[in-house]
Image (cartoon, rainbow, N blue to C red; front, side):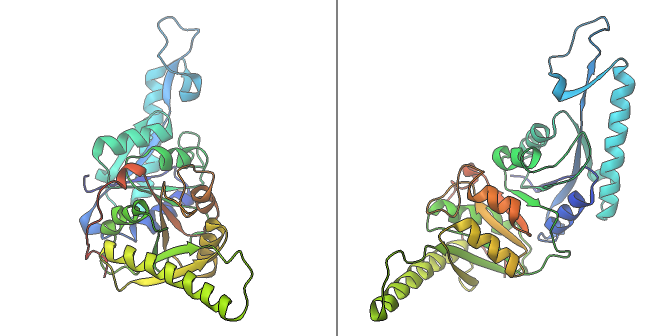
Length: 310
């Protein structure tokens, strides 16, 4: 892993706000920030003589003057990325213009530079790089080789509250948090959350109290174990109750100030799922805060104690 953070922009305020909010979680002095946009590849008009590039028409723009068209596309991309960099207080050296389909191009770039983190907006505008959840953002959270931080249209600026690491008692969920905690600024507030199911069997009196106490103890055990593994034993604990983990997490983000939710791409017990379209997809779509999704292959390392977050 390098010290590079890849920030995806299509020129929209949504993507700019997502980047600004995401960068506010980091110690900017520790990371090299790249502002990346993607422009379409150029396909020669099939009516013109000469071979066709090996690409589908959905991957680029068909033109009769490919040299001029590519130059124009690159200039437009440079302008978009430079405006975003200026907005963020970054210099022109931070700008990168990629060619191709937005999702695969960003994933390939992140892999090539060994990115520590990718930041993207979940909605925006622009034909070449339209960061709409279900297309580019969906592709990034499924295929990027590093954690992906996604922000939507409901972000509060500046973001407030803790970064919440969501765990479910599995080692993988703790490792997901361990992949993100070292990236954060040292003075950033952190919390660990878990969701436990409500009682399904009716009980009264002492039996009800016993069942509730057992549920609370199980949740506390999960939280203490996770916080210890993450090296933040004194952090805030959030024990949530709900039959549906996505409902509980989205409600938390809507009712309390939350900077970001951190979830893994696989776990058990309903907190995180490998298949986006379940809990992770729901949280990405509905939570009004940043959501950081950690890929499965970044959850394989053993969690290490960290003093990154105070």
